[in-house]
Image 1 (cartoon, rainbow over the protein chains, first blue to last red):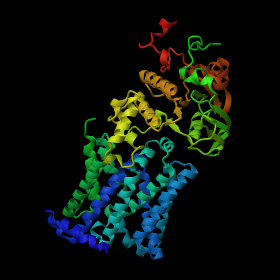
Image 2: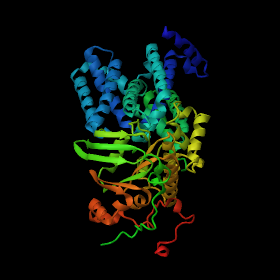
Image 3: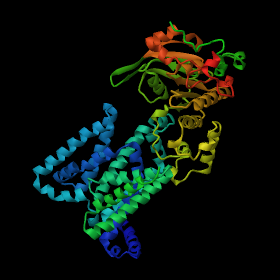
Length: 280
Length: 297
């Protein structure tokens, strides 16, 4: 039933004046990339605020172990990557609070241990190695309709979450105690944000690959922060820059037959470089 | 031994915030304290920071917590704020002495605010008062309320300024405006004058004194700057992991007491009011900047 949503979307894309958009796999790629670009740009503003770039790296790299566990247990590896990533994210937040360690120390330990576990399993089971490239480089040109529907669902859920909690999350990022004194449930919100972020990271691996997910989250938001003086300006600039880099990256990658994820991040990084030229 | 030159009790009027001692309230029954701490202890990461703190904070007065570095001043403030685990009892009381849910305003240390964020003042104030994300616009009503809150602090013109471009004093007034927004009964100030320029410090202290007077606000502040305490607080709690002394500011702030509390380096902390960077002389502040220290001696 949900699949009936897609043909009108494809029809719309086919009307755009780009010849490549007649191809079904590119229609899917562009739709998925646009959705995730917007969500990454929005959450990215908070990731930059909370200085959670390393958290996102840890979750995305834990995908190695997610894949290995999924294949060992006979579960769809994408599913196990998502579940494992959210689990690691929750654990990281807990660990930081309980052990009173700095976030990066807690994550550093967790992060190396999970990568080591994943690599150990993958290296012991040689047949697992063939699924790795999809996770390393992203899978954007090989998405199915079902993948796209999941991505649209995630987009709606994440935007819904932000519509309700963005202000409070930003408040917590500015000053935790101040926000709590104003009645903001900071700990619960931080946990929910970590879960939302971990879930997004899992999906974004499909677009740019696990090595570059953090870049997709952080670079547009950081670029926008260089240019804007208000949150409103930063958010919309971040969304615009993220969409621009994603679409331009996809087109460039088709021209040069390069990995789309890499091209998207190169565009984003180039725009970041330009933003530094702005006189202060 | 050096006598702290700055303390001239005869010429140092009590802050007007001590309205609870005399005046109108003296005729009626005395008001209950605003806040009572009983046997409060805090242990963080296995280290005992506060031990058996007992204190009563009078309503409508300014109480200062003083003590050396590492004495637990900020920890005590955060414990009262409700963000740290503790043992013992912390009770907020209504004027009739019944326990009541706290209505707190908090002005944190300026240094701990992330000023790199791309955020305007009105956006900052809306974070607390509006659910719709600020990037979808700020409602007229929220904007108007924020403007009025800033107005009282002579800061309306800052409404659309980026937070990162404010001076220390401006940022502090914005934080106080945000804190007052929630109609608090108790205001907690963490190091209210550090990072604030002289003029900003004056203005802040004046405004606060007026507000305290008008609204019967109870103010509890932590400060390492004794010139601020001397001139602003009417009651002082000396803290060094536990309360070591307390009383009216004039009685507590004697050189022997300070020597006890701070050790022999207390001279470093005790600025003379006329040389101090920040003084709060309230209503007695001349309209012109004070003359040079020499002229006053």
